[in-house]
Image 1 (cartoon, rainbow, N blue to C red):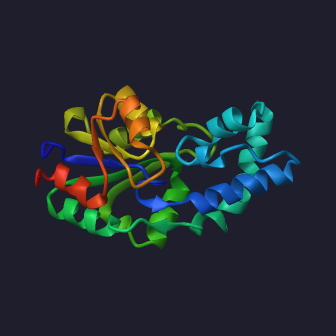
Image 2: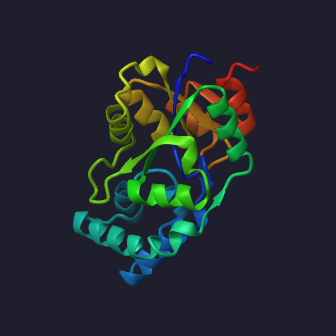
Length: 217
């Protein structure tokens, strides 16, 4: 695996455990709109927010826009930092960077929020570029974010790029963009989910991921 020069990292469920903030903000949106909380709200962890409100809450397009607006009112000041860095992530990033890899973030979270989170937790300096969704709802799907990061950084050799994420949408986005994907098991997705989505590699821990990428196993 040591042929991958460019590493694209998902954020939620891959670098940080954001479950508390996301679920609290979903509840805030549903309560404010007078709607019931969806079953299994953990399904919001990973996929684009607009898609999740539509699919898991049964909202129409206008309701989705309103739910996202209310969600983000709380998220931008409170939910953003109801969050923590997974154990072993700084050490993994340090190893990869020292090993000559160039690191990026490719997240379905709005880019402005992703930058604030990574700065708050002291991780932003590991990344050449932090790419995310557009706050207005465009560039929402994972493949669109991946293409955004590729374009902004002039990366044309997709065989040298590896996407690293914890959910099926990371795998699907990578496939649609023509790059390989490593699924990780310390986040919100299961091995079955990642395997069925077609992940090229699967790593159980941050240390294992670094070992695989650097060819240390």
